[in-house]
Image 1 (cartoon, rainbow over the protein chains, first blue to last red):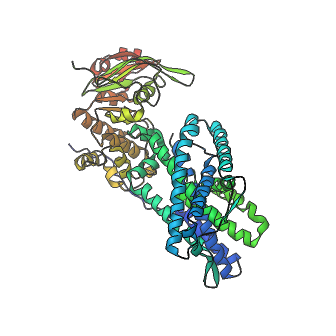
Image 2 (cartoon, rainbow over the protein chains, first blue to last red):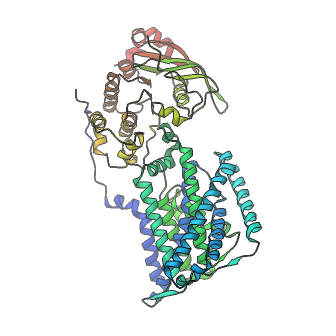
Image 3 (cartoon, each protein chain N blue to C red):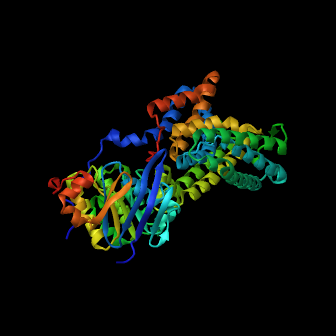
Length: 343
Length: 241
């Protein structure tokens, strides 16, 4: 007996506008770059600012990507995420100071090895702290948003004070590794080498994260869990374990972002994570809670806009990202690439 | 008669301040289709969700194939061999149809013969295999939801209102697929509001009211007694096809 239904499925071709609609957020980045080109009189300044904006965006993305997944998977609002940025920066810089010989040598290979060691140390320590943070602070307040805000803020303060106890209350000024100082000249524009490195690292991490999320079983589970965690459990997967894994990975990425951000600013303080949290929140919100792609686009927009506006109208730079958030939320109230939740 | 594959004894479940299940006693025999019937709001969906561990039973005992699963976490219950089709379908709209099915295949691979069987039962799934599940129609989503439970052999299927809100042609497709599953010897606990579908598929029936099973027996007995239907569910078979 054939089980074919009486009705036949049909596929209707969508119109051009409908087909382009999902790509609209992606197009915002080139549109922003084009607007910058039109608004900034000198091409060399525009190029410098664009690379600087992309580098800043990539670093914010690295710090924010874990937080968006943590929220998407378990509805956990982690105000303590900035603590991992600070810890990562201090651990990474300590390793760089310890490897002063390698970091100060006029050899790109030795400098990158020192940077790699600093990044790995920062990620291992922040991953471990993230595991403990989830177990002690986050786990007891699943499902209670107000309590999450209060206890994770408390956790942030405690960790900041621990940093002060261990490394002292003063800010630490740092020098980038020898061959990553200074810049290159391209088409009349001065482009800092470190910013190019940050763009490269951010891009590689984004592509790696996309590969894991799109092409592996664990990525499938994470994406499905962000959308409907209950159903993922009903299919036999232990979502809590996945969540802990994502929390640890997100903390480690925040730690890596912290090292890179510290070297970008060339100064680190115990409060640096708290300060950068504003940008992280903006990126996570405009990207769409739980969306890695949205987070990536949002971070690039924030980085580019901040650099362009700081050049064109420095006084407006402070509120430019808030303006961007308002504009995007008026266009798409759930963020640029919302993850539809079915709970 | 062999031991039932699923047994609920005095199961009570609260949701917030509401006492929803007030002592459910139910047996689901092996290789049979047991229909769970009753008016809206009597606790049918809560019963299935309590079996799956989504809501915890505050009293009573749930035994699956001889093992007590009352306090087990949902993933462990699912992995013990229960396929669940929830009332809201639980489709992952951001994933493709194929990815939904891959995720449902806990072994990590889809058996081609099983997939072909599903394609034959639900042809739209073949058509939209590589497309995002979120763009499927309501009926197609329901097909995917059931197909996901069928992608691997389960020891028990819990299916919550598979024909709810669907066009008659799609209801027919669903009923055919479920009949195929039944003929393959599956054990099924099926919540259904459409009495015509329930009568066509069910071997046994349990009727719920006010958070309890108030009657259970052979489907033939209920289907043949209009007075009993009227008394238990306010139903009249005159309206059934």
